[in-house]
Length: 126
Length: 271
Image (cartoon, rainbow over all chains, first blue to last red; front, side, top):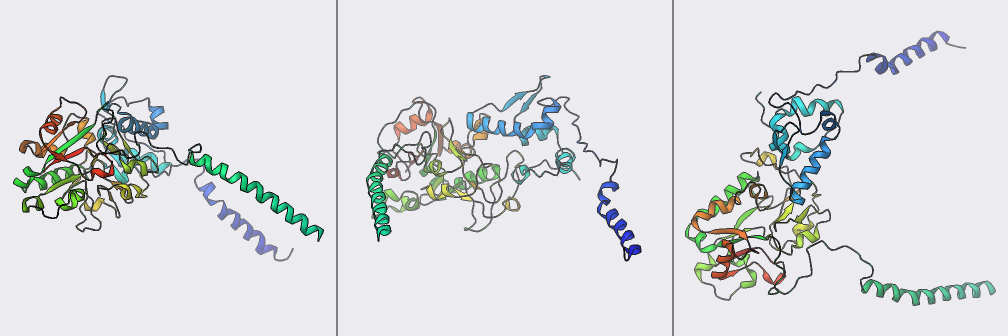
C-alpha cells in the first residue's frame, strides 16, 4: 500500500472524530429533568405516572368537555382537594413556575408545545 | 380500413353507454341521494323570519336599549373597555388590524334593512352597541371547516381557538362583521394582560363568546354588568317566558339586525 504512513493515522483520526458524540457522553446519560414539585398540594389530579404520560390528553379532554359538552369546571383529587379544570386557573396555581416545571421535561424531550402562544404563564418574580 | 372501423364502433358504443349513464348519476345527485357535505346540527335553510321554531332548551340573548346609550354617551365606552380588558383584546391602533368583540355602530350601518329616505336626527346619531349576534341559525358555524366555531347548549355561538386554522370562512359568512382576524401577534398590543383568560395567537379569528367563562361562575356578561344599572342592557333566556328579558321583549318594540337573512339573531334593539 502506498502512503501507509498517512492513510492509517488519517483513518484513526477520522473514526475518532466521527464517533466523538458517542464516547463523549458515554455512561453519563445527560442531566435528567427535575421538575419542581409544588409545596401547597401533595397530590395531583391523577397519579404521577399517568400525569407524566398523558397530561396533554387530559388538558384536551377538559377543554372539549367544558366548552362543547357543557361539562363541569370543578374537579376533586383523590385526597379530596378541589381544583379548577383549567391550565391557567388550575394547573398553574400549584405548578406556579413554567420554567421550573413545564420546561424541565419539555426541553429534555425536545418538544415544543404551543400552549403558551395563547395561554398566559404566571408572572414569575425574577 | 378494417382497423379504423373497429375503433370507430368501439368509441361510438362507449359514448352511447356514457350518454345513457350520465343523466342517471346526475339525477341521483339532484335528489340528494349522494351527500356532498353533511349539514351542521342545528343549522337549517333560512326560513321566513316570522316562523316560530321549537322553543326547547336554553337560548341566551340580549336586549339593548339604544336610547339609554344615547343618554349616556360614555356608557358604550365603558362596556367596550370592560369586555376588551377582561378578554385580552389587543389594540393595534389602526383600523386595518382592528380586533373587536363589541363596538359602536351607527344606525344606518347596523340596520341597513330598516333604511328610510328621511331619518330623524336622533336616530341618525344613535350609538348602536354591536357584538356577535349569537344567531340561532349562524352562517359562520356552517362555514367553519374544522368546527372551531359551534353553537353551545346555552345558545351562544362559541369558538375553540385551538381548532381555528385561520381560513376566515366564518368572517366571510358573518353578515354582521362580528369577527376579527389576528393578522399580527396580538401579545405586544394588549394593554394589561388578564391572567385569568388566554390571549390569541397570530392567524386566529376571534369574537364575542358571550362571556361563557363568566356565565359558568354565575356572573353576567361583562358588557351587561356595566350597562345593567342604567337599564341599557338586559340578558337572559329568550326561551323562558318568565325571564326578565322575555318580559322586556313582550312590552317593548324591538328590532334585530338584518332579519331578512334568516339568521335569527339573539340580540334585540329598542330604538
